[in-house]
Amino acid sequence: MNDTTSQTPDLLIRIATPEDIPLILEFIHGIAAFENLSHQVTATEDRLKESLFGDKPSAEVSLVFVNHEPAGYAVYFHNYSTFEGKKGLYLEDLFIKSQFRGRGFGKKMLKYLTELALQRDCARFEWVVLDWNENAIEFYKGIGAEVFPDWRVCRMDRSAMEQFTEV
Image (tube, rainbow, N blue to C red; front, side, top):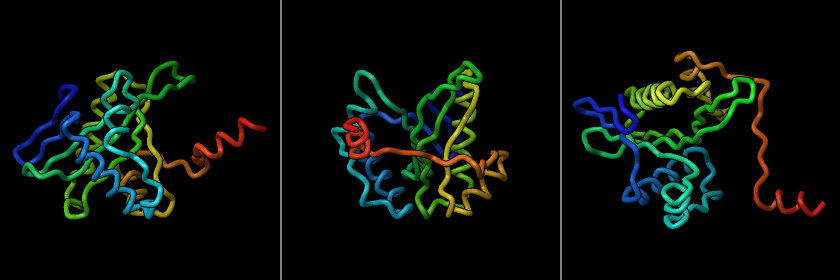
């Protein structure tokens, strides 16, 4: 594997380019609908262009194509482990369109990202899963991931951050 693509006769995984922004936004809306969070999507093509492909990209995106048809995406970025003293790879989103699920494409994307993390000498590869998504939880356990029941994501949205800084 190299840092940009993984390919078999019917499957291609590659790093996204600025030309893929409309497709990335389509996938963002797809995962939001799946998670019943469509009302929270405020991303725009312009914002994605700046945050993913601007001077200081905040994240990377890889796309998966099945027989040249867009099938899914992953959004990821480097985080840092103070305990390890090394960077890690954090998976923000992994989404496979419903018609492509159950055929191993999500697993292939995770394998691609795991290989990428190893290639980049990352200490960890991490992500979160919604507690109601039992299928995903069982899938992740099945590939050897530890699902921590005692760790919960804490998040402040912009409004909460502004309120907190005013206290």
